[in-house]
Every structure is written in C-alpha cells, then in structure tokens.
Image 1 (tube, rainbow, N blue to C red):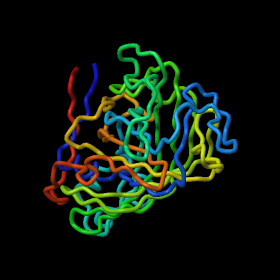
Image 2 (spheres, rainbow, N blue to C red):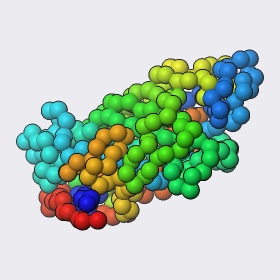
Image 3 (tube, rainbow, N blue to C red):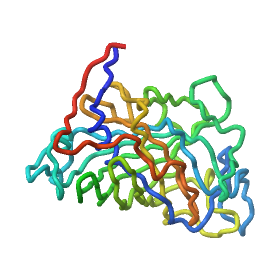
Length: 314
C-alpha cells in the first residue's frame, strides 16, 4: 500500500515558486569528460584521454524531482508577523513583507551533453533509462540538498534571498536509478561536488521568472571531468550555474510516502514537484525551453490558500 501526497492546486503553485530556477553566467571554460574514468588532467592543451570534449551543458531529464519540506527552518519563517514552522500555515496567512525559510532536496538523471551551440555530444554509452530496458553503459545522476529563503515583496511575487547547501554528480557504470521511487540516485562515484553559493531573482505567480543559482566546484575527479583541453585552468575553485524549472501541472515522480529525493525520505506534508534542469559550464548559456513560463497555473490569492493531504490506496 502506498499513500500518495496530494496538494491543493493554488498552494502547489505557490510552493513550486519557492524553488531554484537559476540561469548561467559563471564559468570561463567548457569541460571535457572521460566516459571510462581514465582522464589524465590538464596537460598543455592535450586531450588527456577525455573522449568527450567541448561540453557546455549537462542537460538533466525533465523527470527530476524537487522536494520542499513542510517543516520550515530556523527563525526566518514569518507569516503576518507570527513565527511558524508549517509550510501550510505560511502559505495560508502570508502577507507582503513576510519571509519563509525552507529545506529543499532535488535529484535528476542526465539526459544529454550539449556543446555551445546546443548540439548533442553525448556518447552512445550514456544511459538515460536507469533500470528500464537493461541498457549497457553508464548513467550520471545529480543530487542537491539545501536551505533557501524568500520574501513576498508584492502580491503574488516572491524574491529569492539566500541559499546554502551542497550538490554532487555521480557516475555509475551499473545504471540503477528509478525515477518513480528515487532509488539509485546517490550511488556510484561522486566525481563532482561543491556548495550552493547564492540565488537571486524574482518569481511572479502565473507568469514565471528567472533566478541565478551559483555553484562552486569544491572537489572533482580529474579522471572523469576537467576543463576544456584549450584551457590550462583546473576546475577547482571555479563556479557554474544551474537552471531548474518546475513543472507544476505534471505529477512528480518520487512523491509517495517512503520514496526518496536526494536520499531524503518523503514524509507527510512534504511537497514534491517535477523539475527540469540544466547545468551551464561556460559564459554563454543555452536557454532551457520554457524558462520564462515555469508554471502554467495561476494563483487566486494568498489569503484563501489552503493545503490538504489526502490518502490514496495504490
């Protein structure tokens, strides 16, 4: 028996807005990748055994999920002057000037590697199906966990203030991710990881918006990934940006009680939304389609918002 989480559509639109949807402008180089983990690092511009070069973007599948915890964080979650720890209460009573601080977790599976013109350079051995079909090759997954804050600056408009947390990219030569449950997204070799440095921008309910999320590269395995062969700068200490668009009209994948998102178990009251993302590694971003229209449904007003969870027997 599985219990399906349900939410009122208006609250779903609000909480979907409480998400990261960054756009890129940070890193000064394309990257190269070794599909066998045998890269030899930056060496006078030589290929160094990286069989995929000129990568501008990791394009993640639209089947990714982003979880927003119902339990609000710290002392920043005020609704009409009252400190609250429930996302439902904040959504129902927030007025202009109110702030909310919430925990997030996200996961995705890589769909493609794109060059600066948006053309695919992914190898045939990149598995995009996880356990489905038993394809040979390898898969790449990503996870993110953090804490984010936002302020209601006008009716229906949120301004994103701060974000902190970490991310990891995993290489797994035994594809086993399952989007319906969240299993298999945190195993394999962690070849790129770092911190979430900043987020900024606004979101307007019913219209969409853009935000910038900057990620630092704190650790990486040069046997898998390195800067472009024409650059002698290692990746350590650089940054890159990730664009995440939430799709509110489509049901999320791992949103049953007991499923996991980035290793975090989904519990009653959590909100999970389908997420489509891409990570940009150069200074010239390739826009993700639909960036300006993140949500298709409008918001009828904060005063009347209510959230409910109902049970479904599968």
